[in-house]
Length: 415
Ligand code: LLP
Image (cartoon, rainbow, N blue to C red; front, side, top):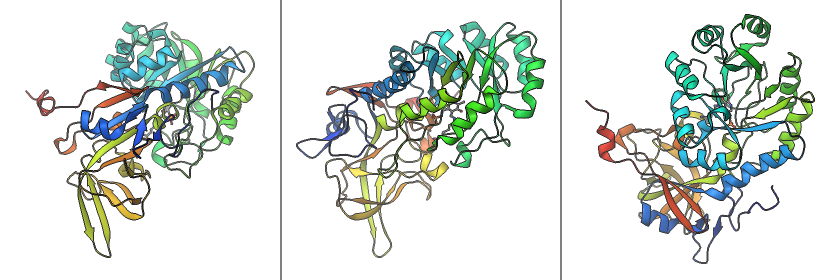
């Protein structure tokens, strides 16, 4: 952990840095009492400790800076594409990756200088490429032969990286594994040379690979740096993101310092090494607060605690079987085994199965930690449920950085 990074007090490392249980036994995030936040801003809401994001960004920057001048930490903004987050990470000196024209729009709005933006996508449209060029995006990551044709036609002279599928498969969920040979992304190892030879009107600056997400093993990264380095000498080597985070207290993420050390060890001297963390910058910075509406006890079967959100604000349990923790915000602990259900008209709308709570009751504020990555990012309007606001907290002050969606917003696009 960076020298001055705040730790948590009385709560596990799954909660945002600087969190604690206050004198009233309530969770505090960024110095703000979340029960009071629920009253002030309503529920559900994504609550972030701003300083947590900053301290994690500094950890990456410091780990590189201690070893080399030739690096870029690139925020994989798909994890949390929110202008306030972009703004904060520009300030911390990061670069940024965008996976679509929409993310590019948000990154620019958040103040990222275009030359510090990398544009990804396995099927960028003509319009997206034209938008990137018109905006002056620094690098476009070319993903296929068809795209090379498109880029030469629409963006001659553009700086590009080639996305390589290195044939490395880390231990993670198949849906978030991207580096294996059988992948929709990038050029297979055997195709890279042909792609390089094919390039005529573009400036090839380097290679890129991302092996997957939520990775807890450094071995694949060591191999990745070797595989890419063997493919030729280029100024830039982008080794992707994917460092795993703790969603539950029993998970121990690898130290960022060890990860960075591994990336640099395998890269040739003089090359600028890029890494693209998304989740590990923002996941643990955020929690979701909900209000409990009903508690349904089925004797001998299960207790359902239903909250006012669900699969519209956190799709990860349904998509990946992701496991989360939950607590009543002012009564941590307890031994009532409960299942946290969402409010959606779907049986699979279960946020957490079999979690221990302290006598949950209607009106309680329930918190699920580690929702800062791919929560807001994948939020949707299923059942016409408005998307929650995003609230940034620091030093006891809370500010809304994304407002709650309204019913009027739901009809805004209808013509
Ligand atoms: N770079 C590229 C090219 C990527 O495709 C990704 C993630 C990242 C960087 C950042 O990976 P991270 O550091 O966040 O693990 N929706 C899924 C995650 C999909 C990740 C896709 N690519 C989830 O909620 O787990």
